[in-house]
Amino acid sequence: MESAMNRQQQISHKTRQRQESCPLRFRAPLQDSNISQVHHADISREHLPNCPIISPYISGPLKVMIPENLTMEQTVEEKNPPVELGGQYQTPDCWTWRHMAVVVPHYGQAKHLQHLLFHLHPFLQRQQLPCAIYVVSQVNNTVFNQGKLRNAGFWEAMQEEDWDCVFFHDVNLLPEDSRNLCICDSLPAQVSVTINRFNYKLPYRGCLGGVFALRPVHYLRINGFPSTYWGDPEDADIAARLKLNGMCLSQPHLLFGRYHMLEEGLDPSHKQCPESPESPESPGFQHRWQHDGTNSLGYRLLSKELQPLYTNLTVDISAPPPGAPVPS
Image (cartoon, rainbow, N blue to C red; front, side, top):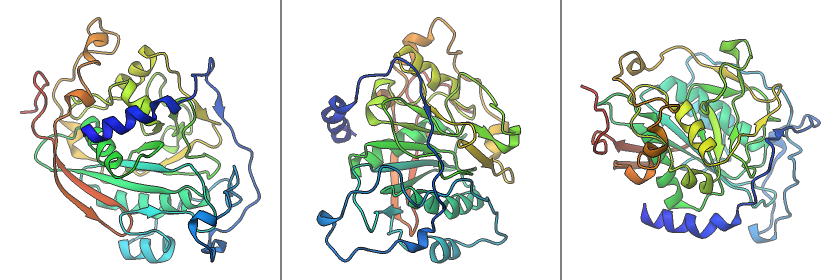
């Protein structure tokens, strides 16, 4: 963790000044193109041409299909042959300075994970984004703690590479429009704006969750994510951290930021959870966020496995930091 922190301190000066307003991440639709047309260029990577600012393979709305009896072999062979071991993808015919890590907290939802990988990899390939997907699996000996898993995934990913952008992605959300660009601007971004389960209306305001993007410097500035929410979502807490640090959110156009939610097999740990810490509006919150996050993170990496479409990180988060509420 210390080496990752040092590297992030070195790159923090690259962040542009914060914009005064919160812009929409709007991009115009482009002509439909097929990513199967992409082939490796017969030259070395250092001689590849620069990728265009907006990929020509962006096609607009995507039809979300949920195949029955989907297997991981089908996901690899039919949809993602160019993805390398560990879920690494490099643009084969051009070069871009952008490169992103996708961190997916996971609690045993195997079918959800298969469907996510089946849809997400082609989605990222359309955008010509070098990337890697990290699935952070919690040992099933305690209540789900999404904040700790996100923190652990961030640090393990940053120890592999100095990613300039990190997407935190719920396992049960599938993108519905390729014009929703997976890039980090100068502001944190709420990427999943509307969801089919909520009739494509804004389900809530003042929260940051589902699918969202942070630059590493944003993550460090808010002290990462809280580790004291066992079972409960910490979305309002994260948004409050951004607000207290003078950062507002960008978001895609409502037509582009549409997501499909997988509902079967929801995590049962969300039904039984202990009392969460105080509300972000409480007087003690401003003090607490500075001590509850990446600087109080305690976890043990049990294994790191390079799967065909993702890197699986199995972590033990059973020892919470002092003062945190522990589930019985």
